[in-house]
Amino acid sequence: MNRSTPEPLPREVRPQGNGWIVGTVVALALIPLLFIRGEYGGADGAAQDAVGEIQPDYQPWAAPLIELPSSEVESFLFGAQAAIGAGILGYVIGVYKGRRDRPKP
Image (cartoon, rainbow, N blue to C red):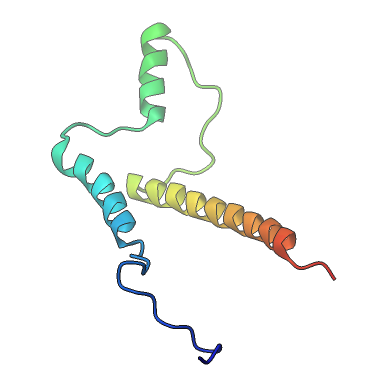
């Protein structure tokens, strides 16, 4: 028997893959969007309404640095910030795991 080429695993022992995990995640993300109707609003608006109820004469002491043209731009910037943060976090975790798993000389 040649050791450089492994024998194929029998069908019942082969790994099945992660397709079912991806399908489950997609389903869990889509089901609420399809079946739950309602108004989706941000926490900023809810907080502003709550402060207005508690103290009607409240005046904000800070103003936004820039006014965004639409809520879509705001959503894009929020998503981009989350993606950049996740990328940095993943990179740092990968670097530390790579350092730990590197063979010692």
